[in-house]
Image (cartoon, rainbow, N blue to C red; front, top):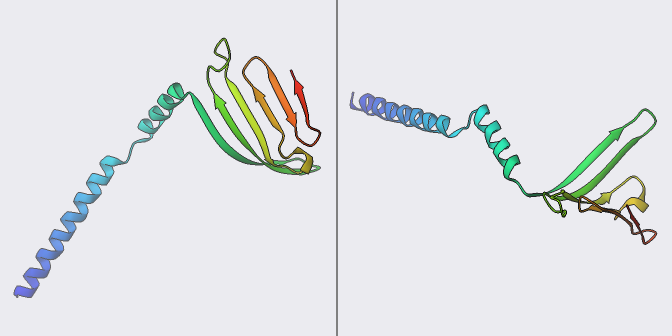
Length: 121
């Protein structure tokens, strides 16, 4: 009889512990509204960013794959224009790899390392 009581007490303690952990975890998981508000706050306060983006473009005639690295910064230009730098890491044509596009929000530069040329716009 003592073994049954002891097992029942252990079982109840384990169940209460699991329930407590579950309730605490439920409080820690943000709701969808909290996630959206956090994302909006982040978008309003972020000043710069960096990403490596792999992409696929499917067209009826061809499919293109590539990877670019992006850097962006808000209020970089003289009047608060955003700046951006894009570098081609992988491309369907080898001569595009290494191409860099940069803008300070007012002027644009495109560097082609294959031809060692810069286009300014």
